[in-house]
Image (tube, rainbow, N blue to C red; front, side):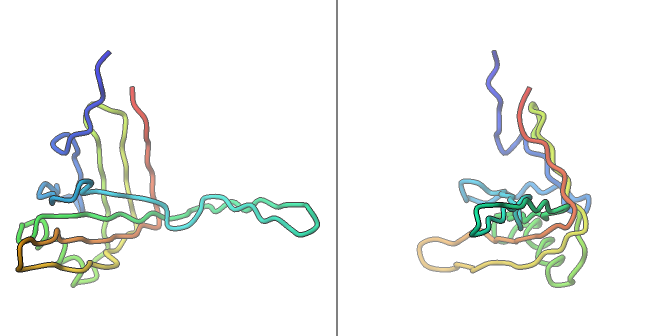
Amino acid sequence: MTLPNYSTDLWVFTVNGREITDWGETATPFTEGPIDPKRILRRGQGGRAVRLDRINPGRTVSLYLNPGSPDSAYMQGLFNSGANVEVAGTQIGTLETIAGLEGIVVNDAQTGRAGTTITDDQFTMEFNVWSGLKGGK
């Protein structure tokens, strides 16, 4: 049995068709998670409950890139211009894939420069439409 390999060099990720490769030093240079819960359980004081399903909970994605890199400059340009973004990602050797549509770069993050170390350039995107498949072979 072969172990799944989740190395950075096997993670193919694109923003508006451009492959991002200038990952930063952060332990996990790509993260994604829900904006809102997919389902909500509303519990009443009388002991009954109702279920609320959200059709589309949205997704937030954070990228941590090497400062001064071409990919960081590209993301800064998308942020400054307010452009709409689409993303796609595949972890080669697994069945994991993602796709985000109707997105925007909502924020950058605190920047640390000079001194004894510097920080990665961080960009946060949010998507209205998201499709993701986790798991393996």
